Image 1 (cartoon, rainbow, N blue to C red):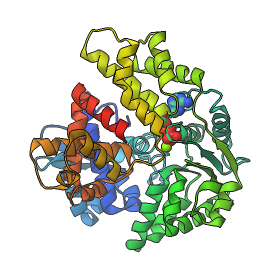
Image 2: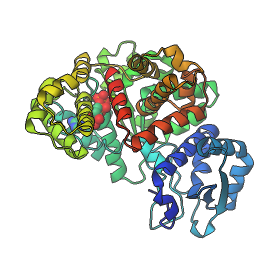
Image 3: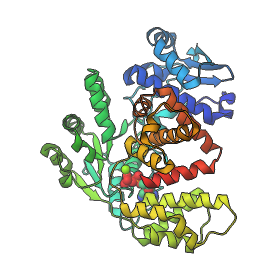
Image 4: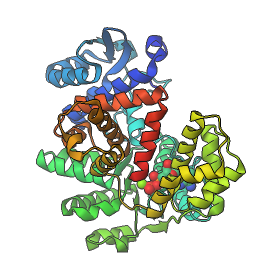
Length: 472
Ligand code: ADP
Ligand code: MG
């Protein structure tokens, strides 16, 4: 947590406030654009949140004045959406802590997060930047290596230790749920650990596509270029998605070349090898093929057992060998389904004191086994989430998108919004749009409601979420 030690009242109830502050920053960033946010919004630090006021500070008058003169509307609107209409705000200027402003600014949305410039001793990192971009548990340390994936694992490590040398670009491919995203992000973590100033960017091809389309619509291509050319390591997930849009392919081709030619590292993932991505332009395919191509296979039995042991340990649940072997025998193709089944077991064991038997597992894990067999190859989309939620709760998709507010509809809708935030890269605005043109605040409210319930350990919601995920 990047906030100063003296903010004890903030730290005491960190969880929720953190979230509202994160939400605020995200909305504000969306409103004023990455670049402006980078320079001015990121200078804003949270000091304290109390019952009626949120206190912030900036390092210079200049920052506060600029924010309030140029971006007051966006600031206040974002503030209200995140903290509600009741709260006041106050921005102090804290010059005592300022050194050379602007020196440590890095490119937008990179993992070398914008640092406040106010301390030489203690590096401050904005919490949202890292959190939103890389999943903290997707590290090399948390990756279980076996025959099926050790080649990919070693290649990913080699890239992380020496980006842009030899293995550039790295192209990882394999079916869904086998750890591609995990390894790609592990590269990002390792590079950020090794080179503190490295600008690492992780993005899905879908998000890249949406961003370029938006940049074109808003005549904002310069900003887009700036965002993608000032990067030391670019990690792009699910590049098969580029096959869908020519415009995105073209832009990515130029981004790729620019980075490659200036000696920057690139690592890519896909659900299939480059030659099988139909509709991919030849020149882009050539770029993909000139690097190091490596595949991940489904885990063998020993690796499945090792993964289950490892995850059960992490979750702090004790499972007998018999149980572990039953799961490993029945779920064979997909590590995500292995994880899902473990979560389901945790829920089962919290419901009753009855001992879990292999037979119970077989009946309870049926849906994971089906998901495992189906071996989905698609990226999760907002549409898919709406369908799965509609099916699970037996409501219609039209109702999810409707204005109806009865609990029978509103509750599934909130769960769906929560899942859209968790499983896709869509912004609050996009999700709101997909749910009948609702605005940011409704989506934030839905997301917060479900995450509050999860924090309170509401097992019913956990169970709904697991079942819906198994339908995806
Ligand atoms: P993909 O991107 O290939 O669809 P992910 O990287 O999202 O798959 O992996 C799905 C889940 O399985 C993630 O939670 C990931 O941490 C986990 N996982 C996959 N492979 C391993 C592994 N070898 N060791 C530990 N966890 C793994
Ligand atoms: Mg993935």
